[in-house]
Length: 214
Image 1 (cartoon, rainbow, N blue to C red):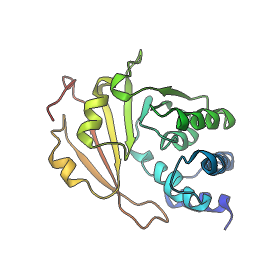
Image 2: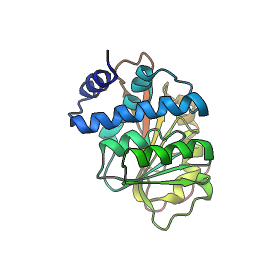
Image 3: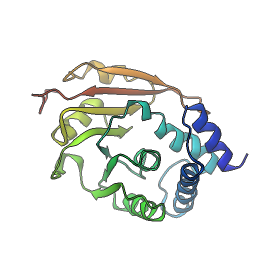
Image 4: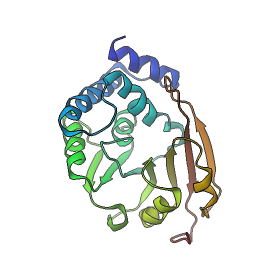
């Protein structure tokens, strides 16, 4: 099946009615990732059709849980989930943050070639990052434990802002070790074409929750 059809069928299975131009951008992202991956080893997933499932659809499955405003992708790596989200949600302002210069070279090039003017790329460790303006949301994809992610990014999110942690199997041990600053939500996600567990753990920052005990 052509790559474009994989993307169309996968997005439809997620309930996304995307314009052909948006789906074409997603396909171009996969082609860029596959091309760069041959030289820079950005991801263990090498085959483009597998990238559609494991990187594109796996990123877009969280769209129903995103709000509006400014989104920080903390530990973006090769731009996941930030680049697919930026393509599908041009109304969001995204910052893709990582300390890996090699991977961020790809992210910057992809953003330029795909004409994504709704995102910035920042090379820095998340606990050291001090932007001029706080974020409405922060998302991480299999980067760190829930507690570590909150500890390192709590200063970056406005009161009432949302933390979203993308996980594989339900992270019960992480949840048990974490004292959330508000109600904790655990969502089981279904990625079309993926025979593996995916979960999203999300919660909102309370007015006085600038720090926590781990």
